[in-house]
Length: 243
Image (cartoon, rainbow, N blue to C red; front, side):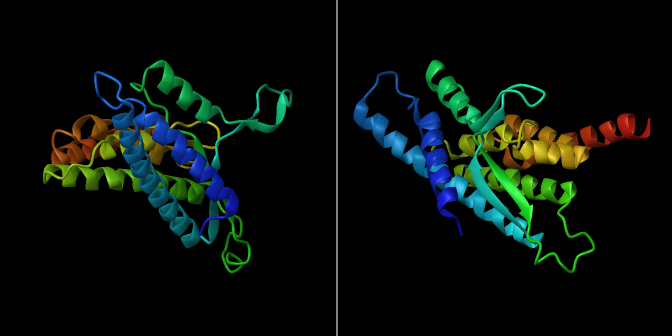
């Protein structure tokens, strides 16, 4: 399922995000035992959420006769015009996540630390009209990574409504989905943004509204988020595509 490189990068990502979300245990006074227990619990939630997402992404990529490999997001170009190119790259997302978590004492999050390298399987796509994968297909694969976490948010909210304690499962998955929608570098948000701008606007609007409303009412929050997202998408298409 995962290559050795993927497994290594996934493990590092899980540890980093586990620390980011578990840094603040919510208690007024620091107690090492409780802090460590909370950190382990949060890390397990992060591990489940990320591995579930990666399995969905790989499944969707296979449907397009392509492969998707996870790796830590690194910046290799620090200046324009071909200058300042780094050999190994800087794990910018990871640094931002740790710095923000420590300086805010666990109150602020940044979760965009991993990307998906998507490429076509030329043998599997040999009978297709287009052998090389298109931006539209890449955007669809990237979108499923976002919706994998949204699906977990919906499941988590439903469980919480039935009185099942799931800790901060909902917040973890919502923040992972939101920050990976950023249209920067090789993040999934950039794949969606450049592959299909309508899909990007629709999903970004849906995520933001759902994030604000889903805790109050799961069904109502999703309905309102969907209506606003559809409206935002069609308004953009009307004013910028047709005008």
